[in-house]
Image 1 (cartoon, rainbow, N blue to C red):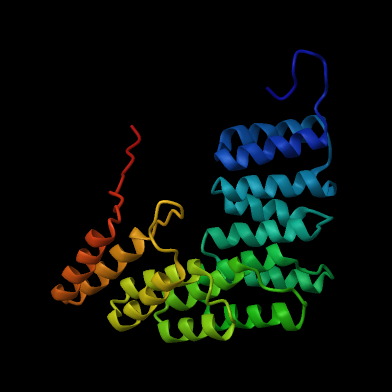
Image 2: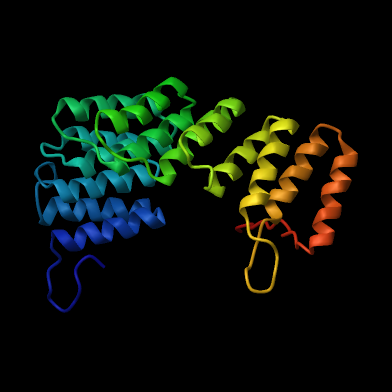
Length: 267
């Protein structure tokens, strides 16, 4: 219910929290009802940056990108969160070019991006396969905006390079940026090796992964079964069955338990 029977009236902060919950759940009909309630009883959305941003986020996450864009364009006041929310919504829907255009408009309006903005931008480039644009943004993030990259920024670049089959470049990127201790990046590259059937790079990446992960023992839990399975699948794709058998033997000797796949069917 939008207004409880206790007589306490919901305010803007309440609506922002409710919109956030609706966004996470993807309840579009509920979100539309809340939107109508706000228009009728509370405020002019175009002038309220927080409620406006919450509605843009809600519509984008519920799949109504046109409604999100329409609201965004009508907003008279936007902060960095508003711009970032719109970029993120476009990124999730694979609209990389549009996300970059929104970013250009953001800079022209005088709003400076933050670390989260660049996460959304790099994700947009990764989803849309915009290699040059992604690399340009990554380097400008440091040079122009003086924002230090975080692990997820590096992850977006490795994912972008991996998706496009630039496995050597992804490998060199991890080494040159001195983030070779981050196993998530190597796992991403190993996954790309499997997709592109690159056994040589897959073996190299797998060896690095195995070297930076703790050995199996009772005191230090280690779950790298996915890495062994991925390497086995890469070898199988290339028809290297002796190598498949060798990897499977290592799994057996180390006592590593592989996780079975699980599917969920909604009635």
